[in-house]
Amino acid sequence: MSQTETSPSHIDVRIVPPGQRHPRIFAMANALPVGDAFTIINDHDPKPLNYQLQAEYPGQFSWTYLESGPEVWRVKLGRQAAA
Image 1 (cartoon, one colour):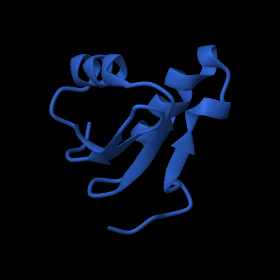
Image 2 (cartoon, helix red, strand yellow):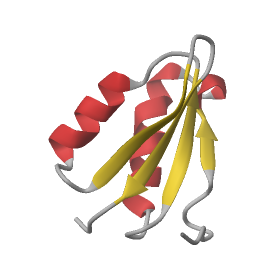
Image 3 (tube, helix red, strand yellow):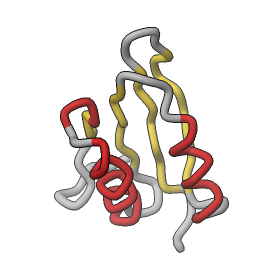
Image 4 (cartoon, one colour):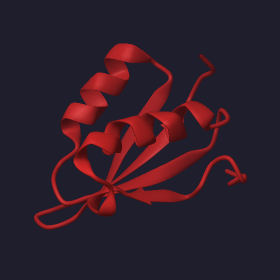
């Protein structure tokens, strides 16, 4: 998997204002080329984000927990298919 200028390797949403978290993650996800991924770092389980992502973009993204709390959650979000 290559990381390009348009697909940074991670986003730490703990430092992003709550109202900007989902829009930033969705923008990063939509910019991913097929086969690329980035890591979301959060202070709680971002499961609702996964539900929203799968509802709006079914089958396009993978979701893999790398760390599951209790203080830090890290999820690898990958692009599996084009829009």
